[in-house]
Length: 485
Ligand code: AMP
Ligand code: MG
Image: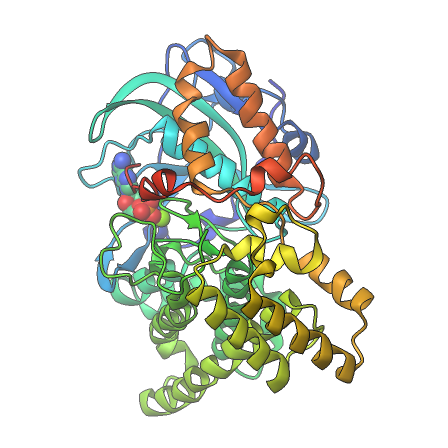
């Protein structure tokens, strides 16, 4: 294997931020899927990851003595706890033409932070992450990217015995809100400052020149996160575990556990079996991200001002600005879904009225918006319902008064409203077939076909129509997703 040109800027942080971890090696790793296009773009050789975790090699270039797991803490479902990469490690950082990325393995064995975990992951959960993260990228939403899944050949113990796997993924950085909470509550103010400087230099270099670097940093993270969550809601995405350790400083989506896309519109939709209180329900995501950013602000308090009461004043003003900024981002994104390039009180009330109708008639989220632009088959088209027609008339009238032609609206909606999303019942059925791939290559082909369809989700054509069907009642009932990982 050619040696990857890996760097390790993270290791310039104080030693308490990481511990060295080696990936486990397996006798017969089996490459299930590999992202050829992404590997080529990043100049990572094919089968690099499976070679990295194979016992059948003496290749010195595959030794990664500086691979490390990151320490972090976090609020999980509201409760603060020490965490860390229990089953993940960063192989190294690499820089393509312009950007720096972490190359991470997940499921490759326990680290110093594994607590009682086995450090492993199931084929099913890693394939789910692969599929959904690539679909998110197709939807043009910032996300970690998956580069491959390798079955380890091991059987691991979950609710049942399950085949194990390792996922390779890349991300601009795995720093998270929980990394700052860890520094604040377990380390020194000097360590916290080192982390802030590192994060600023790596992700938000423009903050260096700010009058108050910590405040500017938090606002920059907030802006990216508000835009991200609004984009999630644009496509009906429910992350499912928006704990502060799963909130990336870079503003990328990551950690695809029990996530899913909403079918029927309802603001309280939850998929995750562990989210029994609906803390991370669809409509809650805007207030939860604000809650998480308040945790980031608290963690950075000593760096906002060395005088505590001045720091608190400044932090309060910052936190008070969150709700308005969130609302503006959200309204802006939703206005585009009805083809209005900018949000105002008129577009806001049109959107609100439409949501009320959608909830009342329990219609499909994606197909409702897709049906504003495209002539959908009758069976999946909510626009035949009289109340929807009435809404459409007032939408047309309003748009004409405001001077938004149909053509302009269609152009705007073409980028805002996907035609296909990775519907959970399809995802689950594809995942349940992965064990049959060896015997039935056509099952793997179907997985590839799904990836292709979901990589181009804004096109309306005959090929995509079968992928637009919402689940049947029966399929809908089996819709919970398990963290079972
Ligand atoms: P997640 O819900 O995937 O964000 O994980 C929450 C925390 O649990 C992280 O610190 C993970 O590293 C850790 N974790 C999850 N599964 C395992 C496992 N099988 N072994 C060790 N640590 C784990
Ligand atoms: Mg996590």
